Image (cartoon, helix red, strand yellow):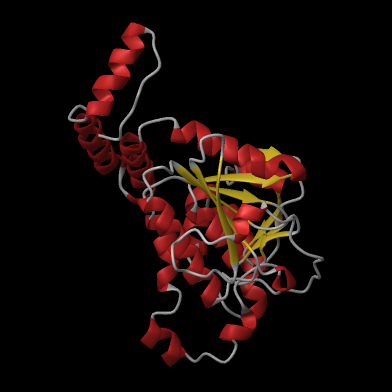
Length: 286
C-alpha cells in the first residue's frame, strides 16, 4: 500500500502537448496527464504526474485516476487503457504525509482506501507500464491492472511493514494469488523489493522492455486489444478475473456461461464469418 518516498526525481518525461488538455469535458486534472494514443486514437493514456513526490498516490490523484479511467471506459472509441508514471517512478507508494495523522476511527468511519478498488472494476483492459519504483500503493495499483509491462530497471515491493503497517489496497491478496505464498510472505514481511526480471519470473510481469520503449510497447498492446470486439473483450476479462476469485468448478461455470453468451452477439457472427471468408472482421460491439 505505502512506500517511503526517500528519493529525488528531476521530473517526468512529458507526453505530447495534447496530453496537457483535459480529456473529460469540464474537468481539470491536477495530478495526471491524459490523452488518446495509437494510430486510431483508440488507446486511453493516463500518466501519473506528481514528480516531486515520485507519484505518491494522494487522495486527489486517485480520484482523478478513477475519473479518467471511468471516462475512457464510457468512450466507445477507446478499446484499452494504459497507466504509466515517470522513468524513475510508476508510483513510490501512497502519500505518507496525508495519512500520518489518521486514527483507527478515521480509517473505519471513512472506509479508507475503499475507493481504490474502482480501478479494477473498469470493464476495459488496463495495461500498467511500470518504469522505476512500483512500491506499496504503486505495486498495488499495478496489480489492479490487467497486464503489467515493466521497464528493465523497474522495482516492485510492499514495504509497509517498515512503517509498522500492512498493505491495505489489496497487496496481501493480489500479490499472493500472483506470485505464491512464499515470495509474497518474504516481500511483505521484510519489505524487500524485487527486480523486473524477478517479477517476470514470478509471473507478476508479462514482458520487460528498455525504459525508453516501454510506453510505446504498452500502447501497441492496447492497440491489438482495441482491434477486437470490445463487448467480447470485456467478457474475456471477466472470465479471467473469475479464475482468481472462484473455485475451479465455479470458474468453469462462469466461463461456459460467458462463452455461450458470445453466441448471442453480432460480433461473434461477424468474427466467424470473416474467418471463413478470409477477410478482416468489422466489429461493432454488438
